[in-house]
Amino acid sequence: MENDRYFLFAKLLDQLKWHPESAKDLLAKTAIEKVEIHQKSAKWDFWLASPEIWPFQLFQEFEQRLQQSFKQIAKVEISFKSVSSAELTDRLLGDYWSWVVEHSGVKSPLLHELFNNNLPYLKDQRVLLLADNEIIKHFLVTQALGPIEDGYCQLGFPKFAIHTMIDQSKSQEKIDQFKQQQGKSDEQLAQKALAAIQQKNQTVKKGPAAQPIMEQGKVILGKKIDQQNLRQLVGITEEEKSVTVQGYIFDKEIRTLRSSRQLLILKITDYSSSMVVKKFSRNDEDEAGFAALAEGQWVKVRGNVQEDNFLRDLVINAYDINQVTHQKRIDQAPADQKRIELHLHSNMSTMDATNSITDYVKTAAEWGQKAIAITDHSDLQAFPEAHAAGEEYGVKILYGVEVNLVDDGLPIAYNLQHQDLNEAVYVVFDTETTGLSARYDKVIELSAVKMQHGAVIDQFEEFIDPGHPLSKTTIDLTSITDDMVRGSKSEAEVFKLFQDFCQDCIIVGHNATFDVDFMNTGYQRHNLPLIKNPWIDTLPLARLLYPQLKSFRLNKLTKLLNVKLEHHHRAIYDAQATGYIYFAMLKEAE
Image (cartoon, one colour):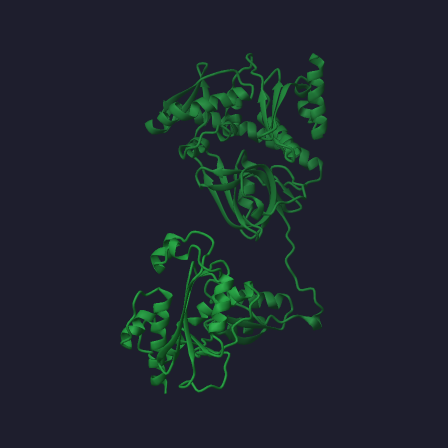
């Protein structure tokens, strides 16, 4: 059974296709203690046993490969059986520090300071960690150190306590000494990596100062990325263990931390979305690579996605960054068949474009296009720049503009017929509804008066049961209650009666397009013929006759024309008032 545990780990390495020669002996002594599978959360916990604590680089590569292999199945977490006999060293504590802090589960803005500026170190067999002030010390003691200590134990470290001290000069000298030692060690590792790269015919130039690792003139930070299944940035919406993306660098920043390490911050876009990429330097070659990357370049990035405590947004923490060549878009049409863009907006079109007309003209020239048209929104400000760009790049400029046309002649009457308005019989109607949508809301009251020569000769008034309780807003606005509509006729019955009532009459309404839309939608719902009668809207008629008014609501017009309006927002009273208003306006229109 004991051998089975080692056999299972060897099989796992076979699955990962990973057999690093430098760690062959250590991996042969590593076994799988157990595997816990959590089906509901889709998570696998691997418990490993090793005679010694793994070097961090070995652990990091193993974790990345394991996460990548299982990403279609589940999330993976790795734990090591504690190696009680292991000797703690500054190197081991420092190498694992960033990873342990990042995966500790502690959420606080102070964690950013802890992550970037502090490293634990050994003194008199005790693990010490410096704090800049009492506030950070209190945060460490009360919130952070417990989960961080547990994180080290999970990676096979013997159980230990981290003691916190306020930073003093002698302690700072100890930190600086450790960093120097770590830098020397990192330099030795970098030289070994450099020798391996040279054996593979990769181009590396070594001068007085450290040079970035290059391949065919492109910067390589970390490992070369051969993976082709690139993710679009727009599809990254939550934390993930490993993603590979490609993007254009439109902003770059390098920060030097108090720990002397550098932090590279890139903002990249693949034009589906944009994200921030962060990477910490480990040696001089990394820092030289940071300097070699520049805005305007394309890079391929592999790393994990986490919510950054400082930016409060998702960030890619990069393992590897490779500069890549990105083919520029070209116009492949034959020289005598080049297109001419006839609809182009420049940055003079507000909220519509970001590039200047010069950028477009230059691109058109590069693509061999002979002319280009500018058609900004209601704006001619780009014309002088367009003229200068056309002269510089030899491209003909077609000057245009998109203008806004306002229809100042809205119809007053619809379904036109030749009739004598003074002798006509009118049906002046109004509706009360449960809302503003003719498709989703219903008519609950339909009222009308039939008028001729300015006098009421008949009237129509019906409630309609909508089949559901009325909202408080509807009740407050219309003064119609559930008791008033409950048990009333159906919509189909009322609409059929109203069509008979309107026979051979001209229909009139105030803002009638709203009411007619409700009526025609209801007629269509019940397979009744749509309105074919001529109908007049008094709202545009009022706007034509009384341009001095600021409001054309029914109550404003009744006040202007001395028409009595009772119970505004009840259909029968609104219909009567609309009728009297119409006849008053008809006389004035004559």
